[in-house]
Image 1 (cartoon, rainbow, N blue to C red):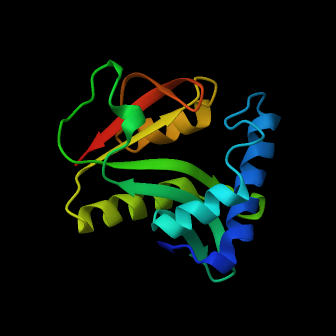
Image 2: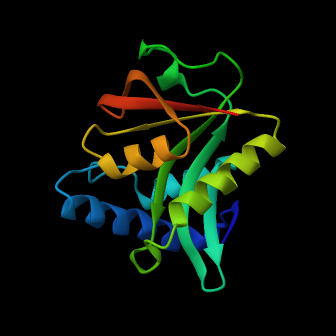
Length: 165
């Protein structure tokens, strides 16, 4: 699997990963994203800003995420404390297609994201998730992210995590 910037002609495939993740979350009894966010337009906007990334293998696009190397205004206020005060990257909207789920993809994805950030001289990564999303919390903790507190994002409180190289 590789991580690279997504192309405009892949937006529908990237969005299908979001839809597949939504269905998976619903099967687990929670909603990570509300129905009108993210949309395919969100993916197109990410691509236009250079922050939309595709996970690809020999079959094509199997996952999507937004990686912001720089400031995230929603992270300015936290009920708790960030682990570092250094420059950081942010992971949003990580999702995989239903056909690709499992097999250690999340571990490979996080390694690729960490490598991308290190190549940009950024050694801290922040992410947030719903309190109900035990799967993502497990992935973050397994990958060395530390719980830092609560932030307000996308209409409500989210659990905030940070990884520091």
